Image (cartoon, rainbow, N blue to C red; front, side, top):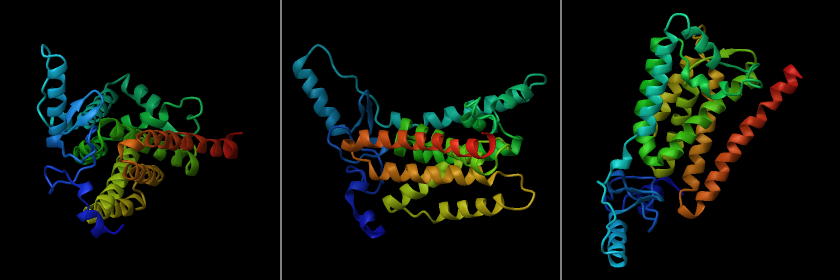
Length: 283
């Protein structure tokens, strides 16, 4: 399918607001709906028409009770994004406390040698940063990308993308730079960039700006003396792009189970790759 086909495909736009691209489907009628048209329910989000039909059916079967009406768009807030920014910032502030801060950071930073006996480091590396500018730039990027991606994907998909991208960055560090200490959420942030690039291409959006940002960051990563872990950046970006492709190809509700299993397979595959440096360097 060409970009032109995607841009003209009504399935990629909210059926009530044809000018708004979206990645979320109504769980009942399977039509695409934007954040303003989404009403959250325990089984997912539904469109205003399906909500009205459900309320009418419930009134007929049980006139005494009514389905609570919630304001449209409430669930589109990037709660996971804000939570990740807050948690990461709190851990950075804890790291500044004399006496305990350094100990906490040393328990969370990543080192491929320790990943086999302290596996939490594969993900907690995102909570440790080298300085104020390091965390400020990463959290700014997370905030900017998350506000767009999280409403597009949904909270749990966005969280899975973030964590698996962080895991991908750690795994590539273990493979290519064994014994190197790494800190920061850059791998996870690069995963968000990779996913946004792939999903944007699928929806027919203009992804030139994302490509330029990734290119500039990649050049800065390889500058002599930068102190940046290019392995974490590339590992997170590749995994993020792969997950973005999974989301793009399994967006239909009937493919939800396949999507979950594919995400599980990505996580299992990354963990399996940790066996390679163990055999090469430590066995």
